[in-house]
Length: 211
Image (cartoon, rainbow, N blue to C red; front, side, top):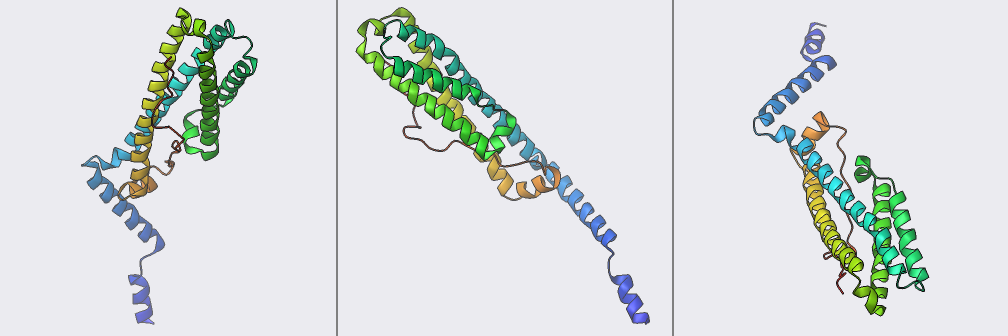
């Protein structure tokens, strides 16, 4: 009977075990805080979110250029009705996709955003190819200005996507490796891996919009 009591006394209670676990976590966190590791998860997350905002800004910049581009082309090539409607509808669809900070952690929403932007890129590319048939349009000053702005925007989109992919890779790697995985589980349980852009044909370079 005495030996059983002694054994029970030596066995840690669940409360004691939890306390020990908390103390261990605090000790580990204190040690990591000195080298900045404890803040690495939120720091990388904010960098990725900032890069995502820049991606959105550049796609919006492109969308803002399209109405003037369509109107300019229409003045010289009204018979290209199907192409013009295709661009307008693709822009409307891309603009209707609602995106925010949560989009990057939702695979379905992110794919919807990427697909809509890819469709707009395709429609815009077909419009620009059509312009080749209209020399007067190609020399129009308004069109030349829009073409220059569009080319610059496509370059910015490519850079923004590249920076976002790099930021997400760093963040996701931190969440999946030690000690970042432990830190996230303990201190940042709401942290989730982010989606990134999948490869598309010629995705490594912006569309050629020179004439």
